[in-house]
Image 1 (cartoon, rainbow, N blue to C red):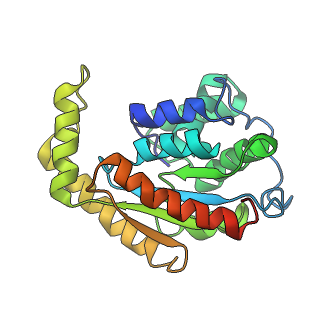
Image 2: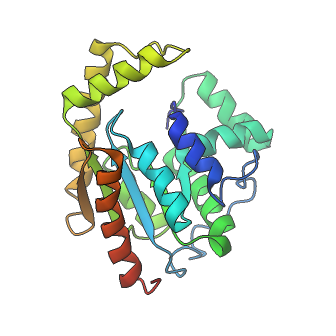
Length: 235
């Protein structure tokens, strides 16, 4: 999959995660897909989805701080593997320079390796911005483990555009795609893919109204996570 920009809030949350310390990737040696490490671990797994500007980075930061979850984004894992200078990292860098999508199997191996490395020091996992396409969810569950809940932060298109344009106006670095027309295209693509993903997980889905203040949003997030921890025998 393509390497994508991650928000500063997300980076901060990832940096505070017990699984995200250090700059080198754990994925040079990946566990075998049939090892069952994660499937047998009974550790909560949460997918975090939402459109650009929905505030999921802020919510992930709050979840990490309160619950000691490990926060992963596939973009960060790809960047870390490239930065590690490993043979796999060199292959990935070459692929991305050529504009070739990184195979989802490779992404999942990186993700599983990071999750296994963090296993003894974490309460649960936040998988941020994944899956991005309908086929990726079933592949994750087959390769790693079933997802427990899907947190989906809902915002109107108008709110998403307004937030990103505000963020762009306050940033020293202006992204080429931070203009209104491009944003509308990005959001439309996101919605088309995400609705196809969400329909696959009716019992796990938790829709969160993200039009509100961060504290109000987090109250709903806490309720969903507390219920999950009780169900998993973690609370």
